[in-house]
Length: 113
Length: 112
Image (cartoon, helix red, strand yellow):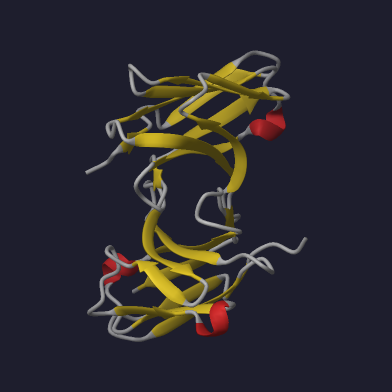
């Protein structure tokens, strides 16, 4: 079974620029998550999708972050404009259902300078 | 507010010995717990889980113990191997929620 695919692996941008991350979950997994992991901290949930609907986005900074999951498969996470404190690893995860544990992708390491 | 805490940022253990990684939580509604293992430049990978109806779950060299009254769980690795060197995260979910809350991780180094 192919894993969760994420791209790019690394991204360096200047503050106030925009950036987008892409995630392709495991085939058939209905639930998709975006997590932010700041250095030295555990992953923090940003948004959770069930198919193409949002289940939980209470911790997503909606003034600058947006995410979509068109057709209930791939997902993109966008930051516009980026701030220095957005430097982190952005992890995408998927699961067959909300009652299962996740499979994580390798993440995108974002550095905002 | 950190609902899941791993108070030991790092742990070093000799190869062949037991590694014990600890995790504490504050939310009494948490009823499902996971341990993840993370190598550098990779995403976390699922290791073992435990439901609150159990106090122990074993999978090969890995055993997770849950003490609900103390709101504490631990991961035991016996015997420890150099390939076990990684960061270990515990995560917990409540019976009323969808998301898992993660601890800050413990970096385990197994010395050959």
